[in-house]
Image 1 (spheres, helix red, strand yellow):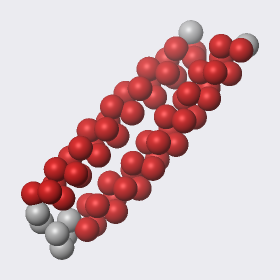
Image 2: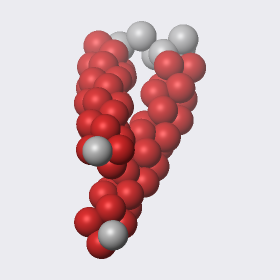
Image 3: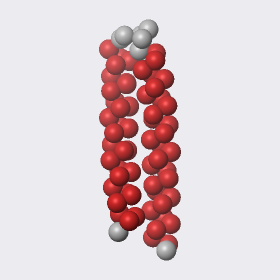
Image 4: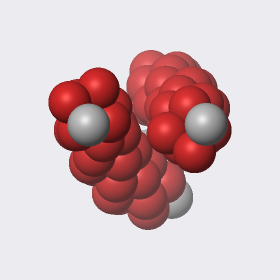
Length: 67
């Protein structure tokens, strides 16, 4: 039981961080309509890669919870 609780807390934290990054990506994508600099593009790409890595971590955490 204790191990499941710890994993579910980790999963919740990952999901919250993913939701935060999702909001930031949407915001930066909207800003990219005006700011087409290379710096804004690199920031957006980095955030998207981080978001994708979190998505993979969430899927992995969910699969270990079901086992």
